[in-house]
Length: 328
Image: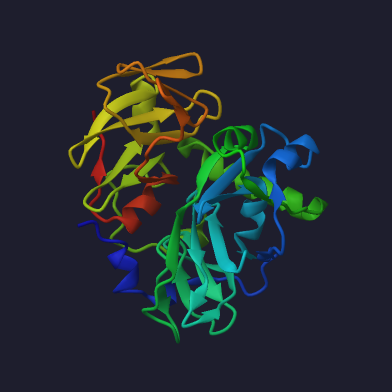
């Protein structure tokens, strides 16, 4: 069984926490959402804008990635259901949770770092929480566990709408200073490993047992199931012409890099081969994947996917110690 982050949960070292006492950013609390379709029509967001999304009770919520890079945490309520998302610009990963603890809604901010990843801090008790697993690591609520709603998935606004026509946009606006800061942070989030440098203050937060099988800031797709966690280096996907078939827990898996947005992804398949032809991923079964949808003889729908995130190596390795590395 896959184990989530025992290095951080069982042996948390508070002296390695980097706390930002007066951060220039702040969490975003939202009170309403907008139809993504209407937002695109009204030019509130550009079709090619990079976004991240998650699904809650059949509704897909879409966030502007640049704004996530500034706020780190966005929190709200939809039809009486509270939600909270976090995003780390250093490790390039985020997740969504239910912020309800013991019947009370807690309010979070991304004002600390641990293992060079965002560490959530709740306003009510100042406890520290893992931003990918939702476990409270230190403080009054140590051991508490937030209900997870899944990880954030990357796309463009246009792709998100094509896949989820009823998606809701979390809309916000940044002033000039905030936009400059967000753009700088986001440049690091998407920078290639050779161009990224982790600052000394972040390195000091790392566990000495860091997994060094790959370069720390390598980028790739991390996939996990109930039994297996596997990391696919982006460069290995490139070697396979950006599409390959793997087997995980006895099921075939297409792992690919989308030619439109350059994001990696994976979904289950019965196919034995996958080949890109322009923006179409042709499968040996006669099915075709394009823009987030799997087109079959019976229609088009979102494919079944394992849990996954586009992430830097060190973060995936800390979250899933001893994980597999695809080397095919």
